[in-house]
Length: 228
Image (tube, rainbow, N blue to C red; front, side, top):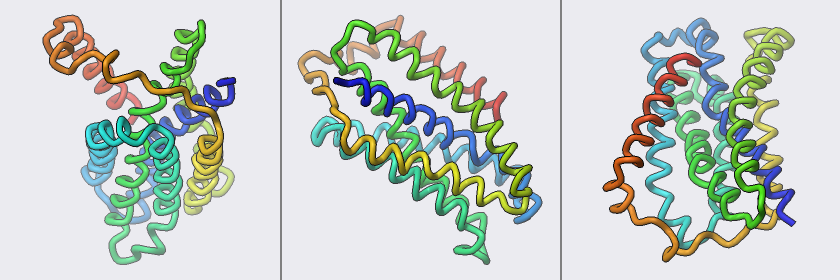
């Protein structure tokens, strides 16, 4: 019953890799075409991850109140429109292209933040006996997505030429649009009830949880440093 849901989540995880790793592959092009500095390129990365963190914090309560579907579909729309704006930033913001790149980054990063917040929860809520396998595959799709995005973008830049980088972005933007329609129709399992959730105070008082949180932070910093 939920096979299509799991597949949509896998594609969503792939798109999450797209929101984090597509723009950095174009930083050198942005520097050459628009004259932005290395520091300004770094700010785009900072803006990406800061926006995702804020999105996680801001939307956690609304998701509990109104359900998952409105927000997972919103995430895909934000990724789609963010990529469109990224591709057309030179045309829409001819006098301040860097400002356009920043706006585009915020928009598609909201989508990335919603993916981080919701995809694992959707898979976790599905009642089946192979949940661990599905969760492992879900997170592996981010890693495979990163590899495919690097290879696909490199091939696309070679095919279209570096000056036509916007066509590569437009091609990638098709994926969040397709998955938007997937999440309009796939079945979603009921969310875990409030009474069955671990309280924040209990988590913060757990030494094990704090060590895991530290490991995630260090691992995430290492991943970002190496990949970007």
